[in-house]
Length: 209
Image (tube, rainbow, N blue to C red):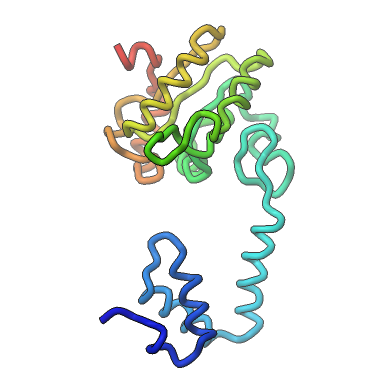
């Protein structure tokens, strides 16, 4: 039976459930369970929860270099002198940075595009951090770029677009080895497979020949 306003004993409860239900993967039943769980908590716990979310939204930054999430203007990866700043891994999202870092197989730095080219969703090159990537390359300190985007049609199209923009640059352009299956998103690839795909990466031209 569908849930409607008449089933809620409180408008405040209804409003809270509606907000939680806006989260991805959260239906109204799960949203109701979460809200009722919070109602059982002490007021200070709920205030701490809401305060943490508010602080995150108000204070979190995007790294000036790679566009990863950071507490400071430059993230702890880009500011780490032990990382290889000449090796840049291009990813779709912050979740992909986390997935690759969990493999402990990559010692370079990143560039987060903030998405992939998807005309069906109205996302074009201008909506992504592509110009900033090209600017990083123009500075001349990068020797290799690894394409680590999802192996979907949109991911492949974005790779090809980037390759066309970068192919005349004096840098090595590589892509993940075939350990990541076609259609996979990086965040759902196991760490061992992803780590091997990075270590055994291929030249982009070789991969697509």
